[in-house]
Length: 242
Image (cartoon, rainbow, N blue to C red; front, side, top):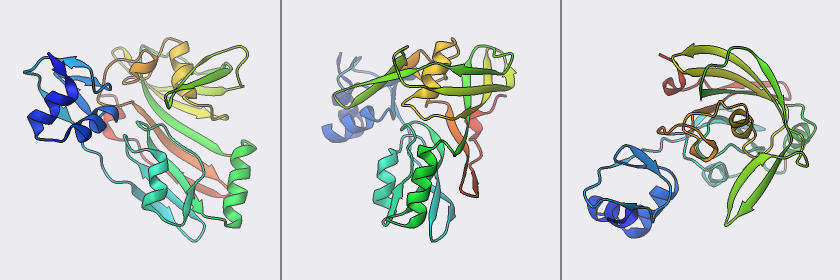
């Protein structure tokens, strides 16, 4: 046994820093299981799989707005580095794919858009693949609090937390999995993940909140409507039920 990053570095002829970074980003699977701690002890003969990160895709761009399809495992804040002159209007979790919006920096539209998010005047629709059979639509209104330690955020249901509202609707069921349409009117950290875990239907791939192991978090931001714009990013095939 040895630390995962050391064995990965030796096996793939990587530097230790690169091996640590790949593991920390959740891109490495050891013997079929995804690991997130570079110092995890694994057998010396372990088999490693490294998931490739695809590039963002432009869905719409004009003088005011840049709408992107964010691939999983890309940090939202990194997009500002790729697209100079634009600033983020909101964020998606690192493993969540789908629509993300940036606005022209210091523009009137940027100010209006940020105000629309603040006033909850933005339509936000997701798709999620969850464990268990969800038979009917429901509204989840449970307050959430978030704690941050060593740069890592984790949320929980807390009666003293901030208001959070999530609507879910089953679209398909196969075996012991359900594909959900989700609409949120608030945007708390890990809101969808925490609410679905709370009703015992965690998102597949969400090992932080009780989900089954998978290549990624099976959560996708499908549609955003903002100030007359409607932006859609179709869910990837891996979120479809066979």
